[in-house]
Image (cartoon, rainbow, N blue to C red):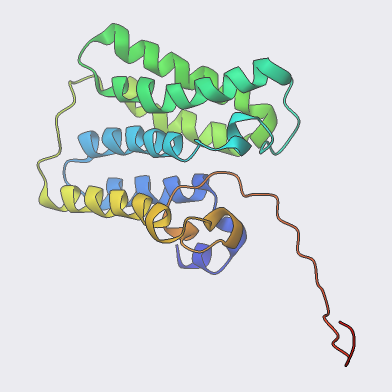
Length: 199
């Protein structure tokens, strides 16, 4: 974690999520329910930061997708629906809803493979595997430390939206929370030379 914090290139969601899952697994008591809840929160908060024209138009993609135009715009909008509305069904006691949500997320990551590379989808497949090998009904974590950890996580997601509304441009607050693809920003240098009669 300390190594990651020293290098801005390692601020991707796949680093962030990996650490949180690792910390929860190693140090919290109610691991199974806490881990499942964190996976859903990863998707939910990722969905909340996609409400912008860069995402909805498809212009924020790292690589050119195999589809373009209105189809791409529809898929970008549907990705938000998957993350905000389908992902919570991973915690459903109804098997049909749970597996439908699981399938949506798997297809989402399969499609994203050619855009974001292999590491992020593979990591998410591994994290999602908890919903295969743990089939008991979800219950809210009772462990006080787990609840504290959850509150810290939620506050970290809210922080950039409240205090750093342009965090995708300036990077401030991004290390604390999930993030979207950075804005395409270009730095230009200007010199202003003032003479007596002209500037």
